[in-house]
Structure formats: C-alpha cells, structure tokens
Image 1 (cartoon, rainbow over the protein chains, first blue to last red):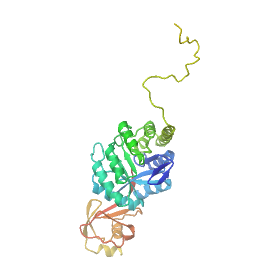
Image 2: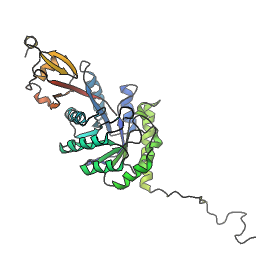
Image 3: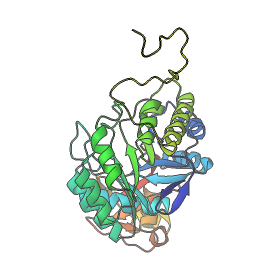
Image 4: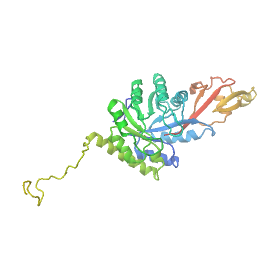
Length: 262
Length: 76
C-alpha cells in the first residue's frame, strides 16, 4: 500500500485535474485511472463566483482525496499564503508545495522550497514538496520532516519522461523510509512503469493523460503500467549482464557436436 | 445590514484580487454581496492572513486592505 503521511492507498497514481478537453472528460479520466488522489489549485474568483462551485461539485462526486497545490508561486511568501488559503478552502493539511525559480523551465527554487516546507511543517501542514533530482535537497526536505518527497522526472508538461535515472535511483537508495513520488515530465505509460520499477512509490501526472487523444483510455493505460511497474519492483528484477546468456538449456541440443569433438 | 445602508457609507479603497477598487463593504460578508459573488466555496485572506468562514461577518475591512478571494480550480 502507498503510505502518504500515514494514510494508505491502493492506487499509486496521483492525477491532475487540469487541461482536459472538458470537465466531464476529466471526471471520466480520473475514474478510469483508479486514482484515489487528485491535485487541485486555488485561484482568484472573478467570474461571479460560480466557476469554483461547478468544478468543486465534480471533484466531490469523484469521492477522492484532494491534494491542493501552490502552483505558480515564485516566492516563499506567496507559497505559504497560498497553502494557508488551500487549507481553509479544502479543509486538509496536505499541500503540494511548488516554489518555482524559473519561468521558462518551471524549475523548482529548491532553496525557497526547503524554506517554505519548514514554515509549513511547523504550522502543521503535511507537505508534498516538488523538487529536482538533487540528492542533497531531497535529503534536506526529509530531514526537515517531509514524509513525502516529489522529484521531477523532467520539466513540467514536457512529456520527456525520466531523464536523470542515476540521480533518482540514488535518492531512492538513500531515503528508504520516505515515500517518493515522481512528479512532472512523464509522457507515456512506460515512463510511469519505469518510475515504479525504480522503486518509486507513486507518480503524479496530468498533461500526459489530459493532453492525450483519448484521456479516458490513456488514464487506464497509465493505471495498468503503474501496476505492472510496481509488481516488477516487488518481484525483484534480474541484474543486467554485459554479454549474452542462453535462456534455453544447452544440454541436449539436437545435432550438437560433443564438446571434445575436433 | 441592508444593501442600501451599505451603499450609503463612505467608500474605502480596497485591493480585491489584485485590483484597486472603491467599496462600501465593511465586512467580508458584505464585500461578497457587493461583489455579487454567489458561489459557496471561497477562502479569503485579508492582508495575507486567512479569515475563516466563521469570521466573515465580524471581520472588519479598513481603507487600504488587500483582499484575496479564491476558489477551487483545476490543477496539476
């Protein structure tokens, strides 16, 4: 079971709710994904006050756990204030912490992320920090009290998959007690399977499903890949070899010459 | 407070969701009515401090206050 701050989940997929062709498609895709957790945001209300209600009613019908984010925040102050609004709005201690450092790459400001994480943890939040593949940052976040750490696979919305394998494997090896989630950059189900095979506890994705040709089918495809990847990890995978090793037994091969034949 | 009574007050300058506005409301409940926001799911911060729903009637607004009114939205 996936353990996130003491709560257990059978699905290892956290799915975003943005960028779908429509709200009904989003709702169907979330159902098809089997995800028990969805990410949401808080945004200024400017349109008469009904848009938020419409969206929120659809989320409530899904009967899933909500993980609000601080997406779009470029300072510690903004991220902390947004987290406080999210806690009030969604009545949850969970917060996906994003403190961004660069508008082109949406790369996390890891220094600001650590600072904000400390403030929020001290205030009783359960923080899900979005970070890079940097080992020291991941360790510092865990040391600060984060029970979940979420390094990127690649840039948000890029669909490039996992491009820092070695660094991410190192984080997995060094933080055995932390629930690790690959957040951002996944494009196709095989990327998600790879994350689970690497021993990551879960993946968080959005655009790969929402921006696909058929979000509902793609959601199901990701669910299957994630199950496959986790089963492979739990089964214990073979070690790669430098050279070939016949899988079919050699002994008794028809027409073979005896080993001592000249 | 009745709408007319609210309108008869002197306006104060508020920043509402980043926009400078001249408003008559003195509480958050009055502000929501004055803005004609009809939804149910808001969270509100005044000068970056969250004001819980239970305090929307009593919390007073002052000239120069900055108010953020947010709702749930799609997110990744």
